[in-house]
Length: 201
Image (cartoon, rainbow, N blue to C red; front, side):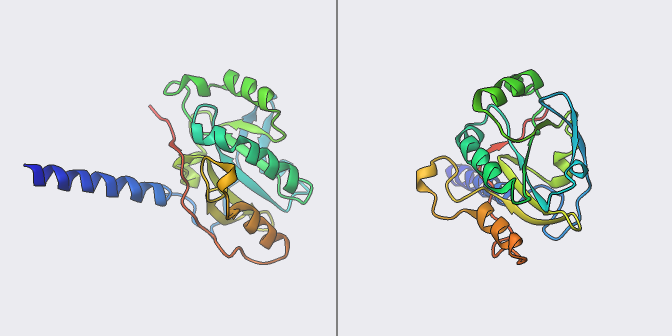
């Protein structure tokens, strides 16, 4: 019985690691993504086609309540401030169902954005129609897209320290965008997204 329980525990742990390494079925690096239209915290609808001068996008699935997302908010703001003027703005999307996570409702998103001074759109994936197309499974989960052909160039984490910015030694998103700005492909095109599972009913 003890052996069975140990094997069962090992199986569950291995499965949880596997699901945290790979995104759900959805876009893969090299795929062409579809545009979307979602409501921003200013009550206006936003789509990628609105950004006529953009070279690409740093799309980040994030939320209010996940500690990992909260720990990365300042880094997300810094990414937008650094790369928006270079043609790669941040587009943040909250994929959580507020019925499953009330603190991630649209009114709460407005409050959080104001508190933190978000410099980027914070969109609500109402009905959870967009995140499954991307295959996002965590918050935060990053997708970098080049606009010329709407091609997905990178999937994964912001950097190699999910909670503590002082322990960052590899800046995955910055390295990827810097490469794209130089007309090159990112050295790393996929990393493990570490965070909270996306909440559904």
